[in-house]
Image 1 (cartoon, one colour):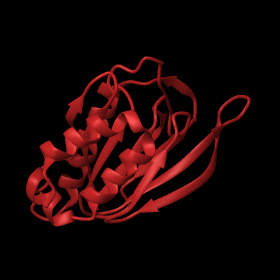
Image 2 (cartoon, rainbow, N blue to C red):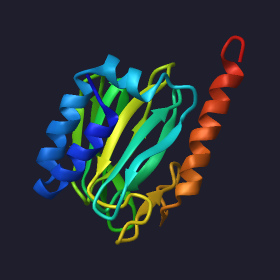
Image 3 (cartoon, one colour):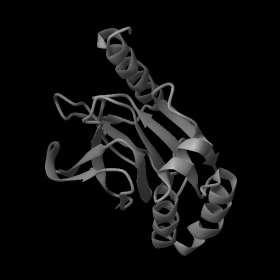
Image 4 (cartoon, one colour):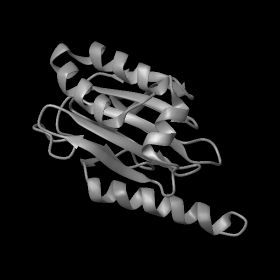
Length: 185
């Protein structure tokens, strides 16, 4: 059965071994979606909930609003993503001389895990009409990274500095849009 505190401690120990060790821990965690849901709770709101943050490691519980999209961005550190409810579609991007261009995609469902290297640029979409729940583990401080992060405007693909407050606002607005159109919302 998934135990949040044990998972955090295992990740703290595992981060020194690198991304492969973290991937195995996340894979094991999302192999028990019912246990994760029981331990982390049924999703009530879209958002970013930190479970642990230090200079070496950040663990975040993400809840993506239905049909929500997050602009292309980078992390400047490795990341391991595990899905335990719903779907998460990732578009991977590469830099061009003046912007970025799509370079691939990966769709994740319950029990799937993705690893992203420190230089990966990706955007995220929850393509379904229900909340998607994921655990993301980063090899560094997600909220105060040692190297500046970037995000790219959805429409123009213009690079700008990462703004976590803007991202939190996007989660809130996506949930508000969904609640406005659903029956009884």
